[in-house]
Length: 242
Ligand code: F6R
Image 1 (cartoon, rainbow, N blue to C red):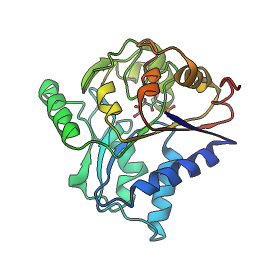
Image 2 (cartoon, rainbow, N blue to C red; image 1 turned 90 degrees about the vertical axis):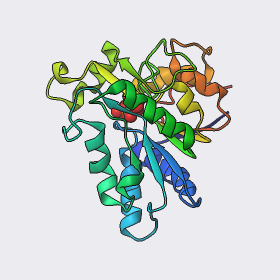
Image 3 (cartoon, rainbow, N blue to C red; image 1 turned 45 degrees about the vertical axis):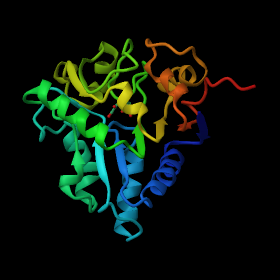
Image 4 (cartoon, rainbow, N blue to C red; image 1 turned 180 degrees about the horizontal axis):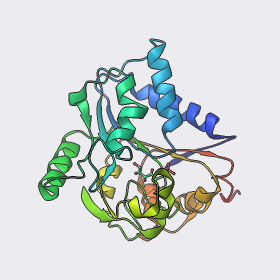
C-alpha cells in the first residue's frame, strides 16, 4: 500500500522523509535499511543537524546498507562506504560495530551469503530507497527476480550513465555491484522511497499505476503493506489523478 506525498521541492521532500524516519528512532532497537545516492542526502543532513542539537541519538540502532560497487576500495571517494561515513556515520553516535555495508571486494560468494544471513536475522524496521530512472531499487536492475537475495549484479548501461556524475568519467564507473535482493527489501516493515526530478517521473508512475512486472523492479512495491513515497512535483508529474 502506498502513502504518497507530492511536495514542492527537494527541501520539503527531505524534511518529510526526516519526519517519517525519526519516528522509527523512538523504537528500542531499530534496524535501519539505508540507501546512498542523491535522494537521501537531505534526510541524512537533517539527522546530523538534529543530532548536533541533541534532539536524537543513533546509539541504539543497527544499520544495513542496500548496496556497494564491486572493485572499489572501501576508502575510494565514490564507494558507498565513504558516502555513508561522509554523509552520516562520522557525524552521529552510531557505534561502528552496528554499521553494515556490503563489501565489494574479497571473497564475494562468501561475503554475500554472510550479508544475507545478517539481513534475515535483522529485518529492517524501515528501508530507505531511492529509485533508478529505469525503475531499479537497490541495484536490482530490470529483469530482477522477485525472490532474489543478496547478489552481484551487472549494472545496466543507463545506471552507469546516471551515476557517472559522481565519477571523473564514465569509464571509472564500476560495471558490477553487490545489492540486497528484492526479497530482502520486501522484508522491511516500512519502506521510505524518496525521488525527485523529472527523470524519475515515469518510474514513479509505473511503480504506482503500472502493471506488476520484473522489467520494472519497483512495481513489486505494489505488494508491500506500507510504502511511504515522498516525491517533488517534478517526480510526481506523471502520476495519473482520478
Ligand atoms: C543507492 C541505490 C540506488 C539509488 C538510485 C537513485 O544505494 O540503491 O538504487 O537509490 O540509483 O539514485 P539517486 O538518488 O542518486 O538518483
